[in-house]
Amino acid sequence: MTDSTPKKYALLVPTSMGTRLTPVDSQPFHCSDTFKMQVTSAESNVASISSYLGLPVKVLTAFVKGSPISHLIKDNLGSRRMDFEGPEFAQGGPWGYRHQINMADSGWGSRGPRVHNDRAGEVGRELCVDDFDLDRIFKEEGARIVHLSGLIAALSPKTSRFCLDIARIAKENGSLISFDLNYRASFWKGREAELSAAFAEIASRSDILIGNEEDFQLCLGIEGPEAGGEGLDAKIDGFKEMIGRVQAAYPNAKYYATTLREVISANSHMWGALVTDSTDWEVILPREIGVLDRIGGGDGFVGGLLYGILKGWDVQKCARFGWASGALAATMLTDYAQPADEDQLWSIWEGNARVKR
Image 1 (cartoon, rainbow, N blue to C red):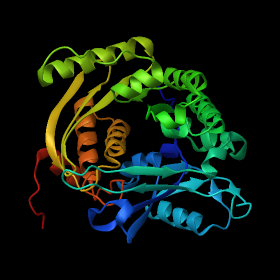
Image 2: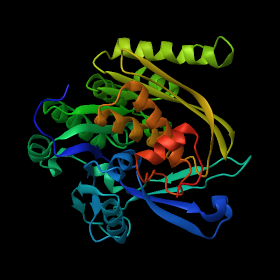
Image 3: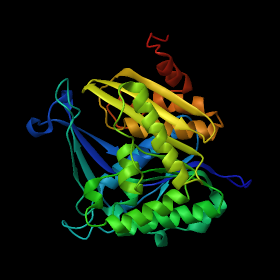
Image 4: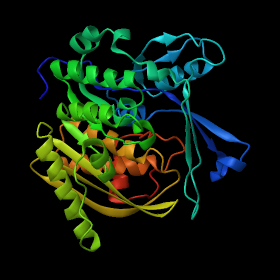
């Protein structure tokens, strides 16, 4: 539980910022010559729901000193109403540090999206608590929720320690810890024992645990849903049983969540979710949503869920707002949702796409 000390920030996210290149007009990357470039990271995507809806948000990250991309990132975070801080690393020449590049087309119809990450020399791999004044950040300023992602926790041995240290000091100072497992096989290769231990410790300190069946199995060693049974009800029962096993292994958490997605085509998905606050369940049966670009939909769900928790809503309202936030992200060219207000998201939940004048 949080302590009674007032917190300056509703949400704090450690992250490694970068850019995403997306071909225009939903074309494949390999045969395109015109691209949209945006600032991105999974954790800042999550934080965008709260920041656009008026809650104070802070980003802890790292920058390449003098880089025009760093300039772009800082301006973007400012435009998203986020405070930020982090060390500036000298580039060290043309072969030195830089920010990650995410190359991703959106897919179209029967052609699915393809994503290629170029993270060589990524400055965010150097994140270390020695570069931050943690007493000021967590004791003087404070954050109600600190959100960690498996992407930043597994990025490098340094960032694994960084996330562990952040989780420890944040917990000591009354923050809730949110952990979205976000398993990536390429990050874990050759580091399985090290990362299993790190993820288990972060999960043991977490108040909010989020992941899909692969995440819970491969990050935490939790048995996944049983394959038996037919139909949606059997599948949902399997997911509930899996989350029950997560609860038994990590009983300090209160909220546990997973999303449900069935891909009809690149532009049409069945989208659902399961969330429990350890007392009540909210099961959102998959509903069809239109998809302009699926990247960031899961982050949108997490961002909406955390916003609801910050607002003190019950589990039903939190889950529904998260579902709608993910659905909104899927309609946007950026991979983060930019809600105009809460009403826009509730209209999505209600299936009301009529014009509002």
